[in-house]
Image 1 (cartoon, helix red, strand yellow):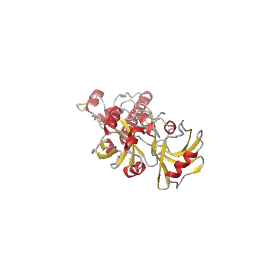
Image 2 (tube, rainbow, N blue to C red; image 1 turned 180 degrees about the vertical axis):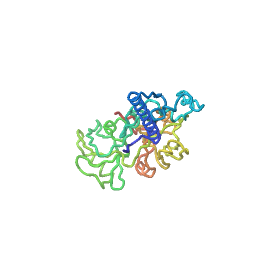
Image 3 (cartoon, one colour; image 1 turned 90 degrees about the vertical axis):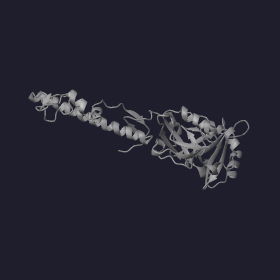
Image 4 (spheres, helix red, strand yellow; image 1 turned 180 degrees about the horizontal axis):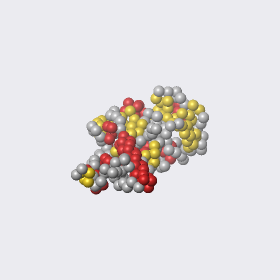
Amino acid sequence: MSGFYPSLEDLEVDHLARAQNNAAQAVASISASAAAQEQAYGVKSDSSSLYSGLGLEEFLTDDFMGLDVSSQAMAAQLPQELAVACMAPAPVSTLPGQQAIASITPKNDLGMQRAEIKQGVRKVVLAKDGSGKLGLAAKSIDKGVFVSFVWRDSAASLGGIRFGDQILSIDGENVAGWTEKQVHKKLDKANPACITLILRDRPWCRTVTTVKDSTNHVGFTYKRGEINNIVKDSSAARNGLLIHHMLVEVNGQNVVGVKDEEIQKIFAASPRSVTVTILPTFVYKHLIQKVGSSLIKKYMDHSVPEL
């Protein structure tokens, strides 16, 4: 049965833990069989040995043909993998879409939850602020309407609307094929006390969870928010991060327009597992082409999403 894992490292760790768990269960089964045999036939075996219950008990004395085959000797000579196999099963933890028995990414990782791009659509009901503003700007791409700007502390920000979200309808009216001018006109004339938007979560974006290395590095570099190099054999490389993509969020926090030095501080303060939301650069440039960089830096909502 397949499932979803936050990163390739989580998948590998879980598969290793499952293999160890299966080996431990096999050893326990053999030990139980040996105990049953001893009770039924009076055959005594060393249940602590990996080889007990295999029908070789009469040969497996502490000294077999001059060879020390005691439990202590076996433990010293066996490969580490077999020794680890005798460990107790790892505790069960829950990851989105997969019951993992072990993982690097913590259970209920907040960064992953904040960055999650949900399938389907959602309804958001907003009211304009005292100046009659919702706090969002829209951009048309391929007959769709997308959020290209969210003002800090605005109604749109407080309502959970994010950069890159697609607007499907406004007050029950389908906006497919509309221009930015039509969208903004519709929003301007809408009832200030109640505006209903139907949205789809950031369809141009995707999330990648990576694991920082022992030096606390994320495995890639970026310039002005654009990923320009990926370290070979890093977690970022193994998990499919791509160049020519913009960093849109780090652990769900919007970093559009944020200086590279500030983004680095966010990465440094992040837990070992980091979830980044990325957007193709050509789409990003199309979204913000009419929004000045100074406006983005000064007024874009960069708050940490609430769960």
